[in-house]
Length: 433
Image (tube, rainbow, N blue to C red; front, side):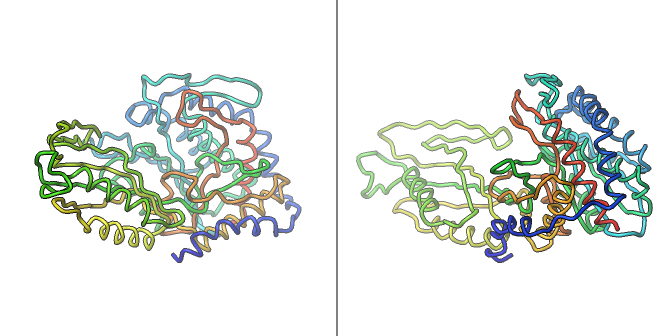
């Protein structure tokens, strides 16, 4: 994907503000009215799902949360199935719901049942703070988004507009900590994407300057790098001379070379842990280690483990090449090697994604909810939609808004669920005509 296109999210506000407001059709007015009328039940559904702890590793809790939403989807005419993961993976599995038809675009709707809050996590499961806000585990990320899916589908179904459409809903059970190998934990989602035309994900909505609603047209890939450095051990009095520079100076040279020379908009790399000395051990499984050494001994080993994020594969390849080049320019008496591991693929900013944003923004404007802008890809972390975005036009961030995600103070703006459900329902309706 050319960089010019990858950065074109800055222009999407022009797409939104250039749209001319239109009045809703009679069917669309009914859809919006259905969402509004069901808002008290939507809040009730959020409370019922939030009162179940569903940390990723609480497999019974994830399944119980899935059961809450399964019943809602079946009531809307969807056929449902629970897809188990291999026992060794330690993940609960995924809820998949589907209805088929021959009309309009085939939609894939994404949510997740798990939260970052395991059974012993602090903070309330559910606490109503006011008429407009609630606090609780996963109320924003992303049980509120799941409720938006149900509210939007219900509103469309109540007008008869779900008939003869193809819509698949996938609520994963391990989005917060995806099971390994990813080829298995995300296999079914990818296969369903191949049978779809559009993917819509209901991660938390973002509010921009002036309160403008925002959606996500791109997310950076997540990856990691392993830097291993060796040096010639010796007496410290010989450093910079015949004894060479040692592993610590070599690691410092490399990391500072990355900082100064591997520079592109949207590209970041973070050395998250570094261990150096003459006795170094790193536990990969638990992300911790030990190091020992003496001040009068030149260190012979450094281990660095880091995070790498990029906008598209072309940017990744440029970064890999330059980083390898820097690693290869060793100081005397030292050497190093670097390896890279991909994790979540990029959700590149594509013309198809921008067109979806334009349609979403138009629906919002037509409903009197304002135009929708684009969240910069650098402002969002990883998400499930990245596994399907290479296959279909995609849009994310269609869920509820709030704050304090992943903390004991996670909150949801309850009024945002109604607005998001109206936007999503209108978009679904228009895509499936």
